[in-house]
Length: 168
Image (tube, rainbow, N blue to C red):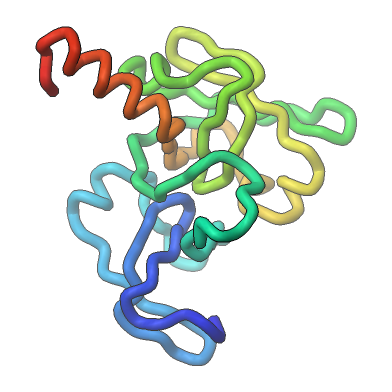
């Protein structure tokens, strides 16, 4: 937290929150009702993924993630496959249309490559490093997770709907 200051953005389990106070070993944020209704929530004492905001002058080791959670998903399967783990997540149909095979999706703030897409689900392969470095290792079937779709998919949808005269 050496360089964290009031006003900074920190993604907490994939949800972008603004720092309102900093202590030697903690930071504080305000969380609105809108944020709580759009996310899987934040359980007291749970392991959370934390990520400081990206500076666009640096390398990008995944896809562009804003921390603007698009909705909730539910883990339907965590299955060991040798050293890796298969993660299957059910998502609302209105989100699944933005998820593409070999595209990117964020689960609790962790950028993942999609291996398969269903009507209301997707599968991703979790490598040992991802499991070790994130809280995804704690996921089990039935657990709610925060989902952020690919940023580019949002803009493609907006452009397509605007050109159709839908204008949403």
